[in-house]
Length: 290
Image 1 (tube, rainbow, N blue to C red):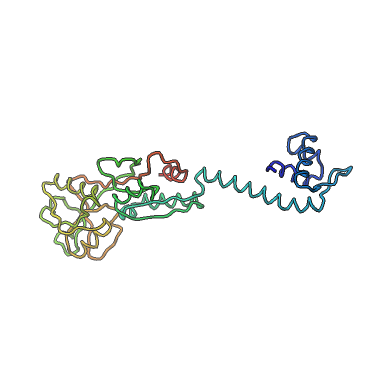
Image 2: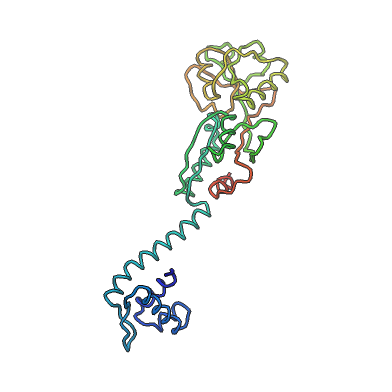
């Protein structure tokens, strides 16, 4: 028994006429009659009583019709499910991000746009530092990650650069320079810095060290921070000064001030990464939106 047999049977049952059912199906009436007879022989029951006007269902045929329609509807749902998955409209996607990336407006906007367009895809989020995100991506625990790229592209990962953002100096509110709106980086030459050390924050760390070198000094690390998002709290505690992506200024922590940097160009880089050769439609659609 094949699905076409059930379709032929359902068409005859709906039309109560072999000729009209054959026209609807786009086949000849004799082949249709033969297929129905073959189905009856396989089932060992009569499905129709042939009449001058056409065909009426037997009690066995009426019972068979209920289940046949369920099977046909299930097959249709299965087909639609497969097609939706192939288009990336269902399934799952696991997205990782650095703590600071969550404050960049591009990231929440992209996630919101994706979930709005693909409401039936289960999207899960995981926060970690850049090395952990890239490892999770390569090992298959994550499907796409927002990370801080370094100078060398990670192996086995495709990268789409997102817009750079400026950086800001963050000082304790009690600092002598905290009343300023902007400050040259050289003014921090003798300050103790709160930084995320390499390798956890290698991209941001390297950018800060590069800019400080351009301003004529090497930053002195006073307090390491586990992640960039925690830097502001450590500055508020008076453990040092720091430099953070401008989006972090949304974190209105009591006891800190954010100042623009002058004299040196500083940019916080952000990228979306996914596995090279990725075939999952959910990931391809996420990347396409980015």
